[in-house]
Structure formats: structure tokens, C-alpha cells
Length: 338
Image 1 (cartoon, one colour):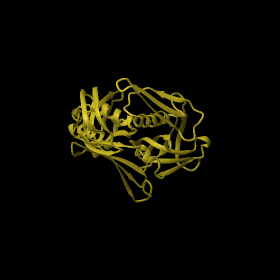
Image 2 (cartoon, rainbow, N blue to C red):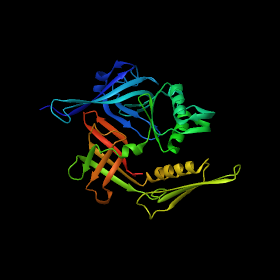
Image 3 (cartoon, one colour):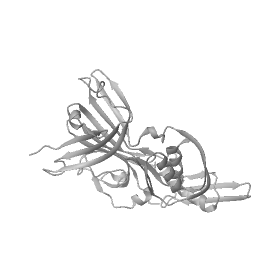
Image 4 (cartoon, rainbow, N blue to C red):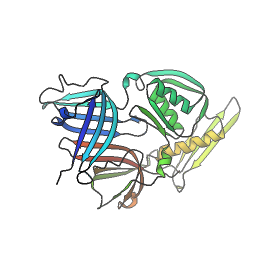
């Protein structure tokens, strides 16, 4: 019988360094992140021979193409590949004794200034998708845009990095932004909430190593949201209200924000209510490694009493131990259905 094991395969600037890593790898983690974040990896290496703090030390900005290969994991005599993607080295830690090097990498090249370079710019007569496309192109990235488009007469980027500015716009319009493998992805998690769960996590049946649930009512669990804005130049008051289906006991979120119509106020009320209420009910599971769980899918939780239900996966961490062990940490929130 063949042993189950996980192997991390890495190309460093297009050169395969997998064999060089194997004897020194202590742990590897791949974070498949959600809203407003880039995917990232962390690689911890035993540096007893001094190679990784010497001649082999990775350079800033070096490109890493990374896969996890699972041998005999779900079935005997099989190999399952998880394509983590392309990453760029952005830092390292050197600790001891004993000597250990941990280097980290992001799913886009920081040299492009997407995250670190603050800018001020007026965007006029332009849509959200056009802003996203221009920012992606200027930073050498591809774009996937999958939310309803919005057009602006004028919107100001004031001392903000491109990624912070775009993430702010996307969030205001009820969308989500992530960066993975040199690609900006703009999507609406409401569409994913309605898709059939990829699996069940059932108490006493599933391979659960640990679990935790939280329920929070601080700036969350609102019953409705109202948006009000008085336009002094037009001498008009714009209002919008949205109520969460099935929640009549919670408080009302009251906002005064600039809008240009009742329709915009209504849209903002719904988006802000969703944004706050996403924080109300969350869960984390550490599982025997599961290659099918990725950020953006849903999971049905069973057997945890009032915490049962369908959850949206906000982030996933795939962990590989130096011994070949493999675990999956899943961070989720309950779906909202509105």
C-alpha cells in the first residue's frame, strides 16, 4: 500500500527547485484569500547547511510557480494537483537557533506599485469596469470583472494606492475584489451563495481536526439600513431603505452618505447592510486536507445545532508539513440570501 503524502513543487524564475527544497522543507502554506486581499504563500525551511541564508537566498521579486501534488490522497495510485498559481517573493525572516528561513510571496509583483504607490487622480465620465481595466493594465495584470457595472460622472482617488481605491469602489457597489496569479478578480459573492455546496461538514462523520464558531452583534446583525443625504445645491433629500429578510428584531443601521438619487441610496442601503451583517456569524474548521475547497464556494454544516447552515468560504489555507502531511483550514461566514 502506498502512503498518502503531499509534495510542494516550485519553479523559481522558471527553474525547478523542488528537489533542492525536499530535504529542508519544514512547512508550506498557501492562502487562497478573499475580499480586498491577494493570495499569498509562506515557505519555512531548515537552514542547517546555511544554503538558504547564503547562495540560495531568494531575491526580492523573484517569480515562483507553485503546485501542491497529492499522492494516494483520496484514492490509491492517484496523483491530484492543486495549482496554487504564480507568486513574487516580497520578504523573509531568518530565525534561530536552530537556523530557519521563512520566505513569503504575493500573487502579484509589488514592483508595479499596485499596493504601495499612493496616487491622487480624478476619474471622469467612466464606468467601474473601465477603472478596473485601466488599473489592471497599468500594473501589468489581467482582469476578470463579474459584477453589475456602474457609471460615474466623477470619482476621486485621493492619496490611495490603486488596489485600495479599486477595492473601496467595488465594496461600495456590493462586490468583492481579490488578486490571484497576476489577475484582479472582481466578483459578486451573492451569485456564489446560491450555488450548491461543494461538500458537507458533518459532526462525527467528517474528518474534522478542530472547529470554532463566533456570533457577533457589534456593528452586525442589523435588521435594516437607511441612507439619507440632503443635496443643498439641488435642494433635495435622497433616501433609501433596505430590510434584511427574516430579521425583525435587530437594530437599524443609519447612514448619511453622499448619493445622487433615491435609487443610489437604495442600492447603498442594501450593500451596506450586507457588508455589516457578513460579520455576524462565522466559523473556522481545520480539516484533513481537502483539495476541492477553494475561496468562494459554499459548504453545508450539519450537527452543530444552532450553528448549522450553509456557509460561504471567505478564505482557505492549504498547509503542507515537511513530513508530507496535508491539512486545510477553512474560514467561513453564514450565507445571507439577499
